Length: 465
Ligand code: AMP
Picture 1 (cartoon, protein in one colour):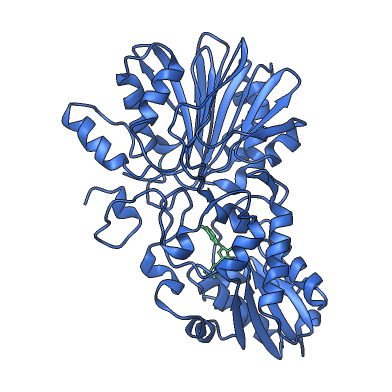
Picture 2 (cartoon, helix red, strand yellow; picture 1 turned 180 degrees about the horizontal axis):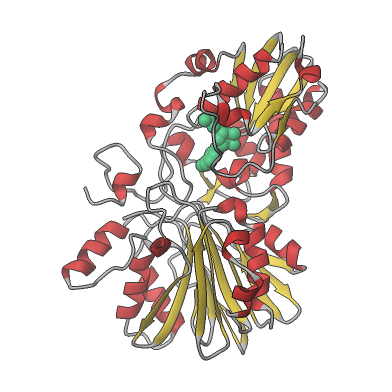
């Protein structure tokens, strides 16, 4: 079964322009998933839905928005690398069952979905998609509890892993965050309407006010009577995803109650303290390296310059020239500013190294632009282990730091030096004293057990082996 990965969710209850505002909310969350987008709305008696492949702006038109009316809606943007680039896996997922209609939007990964699915199928359940989310729907449909909230809780008590979820039926919107709180989920208010979103940047666009986080393990029921909160799950230690701070969330968002920008700036400062180097210029790799590079420059006193410019209009595909151009894929996105780089000792700052393939090409580009020295500085520790909780990382064997030491990665990148932020430095910057985070991608310590995966792959968890 395929995981739901790198997703963004948005919901609103009690606003006459619910679909339109959801569309705008999804627009702000586009960085969390570019493969498909969908909205389900309700006028209190029927659910209306539209889903499609592509960007939010490609999937929705004015006409389509007008055809999903009502004062409540949930929306989803999705990205998955696992080959299931298919409309049947686009969310929100909508079903009709004995108690009416139900829609669900999920950000996260369930770690025991395959086992539950096998059991359900053995008793005759028929699945329509390959999404782990569908397991939750089946469990809800089987529950004998009376209210939707109780059925949702009964279902979620059987699943494990990461889930920030939105449910919509004819009467109410339910928002849930898993007891570990892996993925973020924020609560806001717009006039009399409640809004829920993966990140607060979605509130800013529509003029909503951020109230607070949906707490780990909290279930919010939003209906005509207002908002009610339940905490039905056994309390456990928080495992907030630290990678949201490092790379995934937008810097203008507040996530886990902290400004992402401020945390990234601090990561850059800490990186400069841990890995100083004599150089002439700090150059960020756009866009993900920006905040940390500002922190690095502030702390080191070395000037920051935009030595790499990104073309913001590059889509996912482009027609390559017949006679292939070397490193075309990177060159179409990034171009060095020779005046900034020529004859300089350059500190190149990025947030993370995954496979190091892009990084290597960028270093080559900087050298070709005439740099005297190139020093890579990375504002996270080496990524050694895949994520099973909702971030799309490649297989372990493709993660360069899983099998190479820092000096070997430095050689591969062809940099004069390479410095990664230490795990201790990261822990200090994110404020371990208030919160506890998941560092599994850097340590291999998985806070929620993951089944053995024989192929040493991430996907083997969800596929039929
Ligand atoms: P590479 O040089 O191939 O290791 O790519 C590293 C770049 O990928 C960095 O600039 C990161 O910002 C970015 N990155 C890190 N994690 C992810 C992810 N889960 N999905 C997509 N890009 C990522």
